[in-house]
Length: 251
Image (cartoon, rainbow, N blue to C red; front, side, top):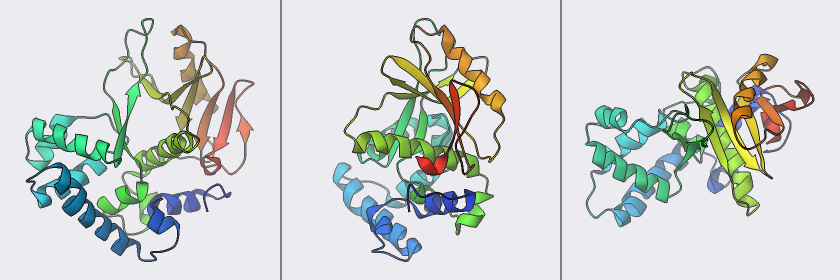
């Protein structure tokens, strides 16, 4: 149950299960069958409606390649090389995934006073269960210790924040920050005239020094507001008077 207190094992169970209505409602009990049917229907019906002729097996390989890169900066040429299609084809197919609400992008935060920021967006999926299925993780326990455990936790957290804004009918001014000095903040939310930085960590005891990176935003023209480290601990805490430690299960 979303919003209920849980530990790391419970969080990764939510991530692995996903939040598709058919799964969340309990209508489907076999996750493997559900996602296999979903992908087949999506490619044969939705994608085929958008593109007159498409290599269905090639498109499936493409979605899998994209899923392996959740939470990463978008690299079209890397995906194209992986699946054996042109960069232009990959761009078109990414557009299909975005238009059908399979993926979304987090744009880098930038303004005139932050001149050394990276310009490339990061790529995320709306549903982490789909990512886990496409990347062939057979259980939440294996996913918890797998190669993408950090990236998919970041994806889950960011997609849950985004969906909470969408469900409330609110605009979501959400970005990430990274500059050429390799200083990075996972999420920057602009709200009520302030920038709110968030770090996402697969840890029950994140180092409080993580919040020190938030100071890079002090050079921006918009003032910095309250920040937080989102992690796997089970209770609320604080770094200082301006920055908090928040369990991911609360999102």
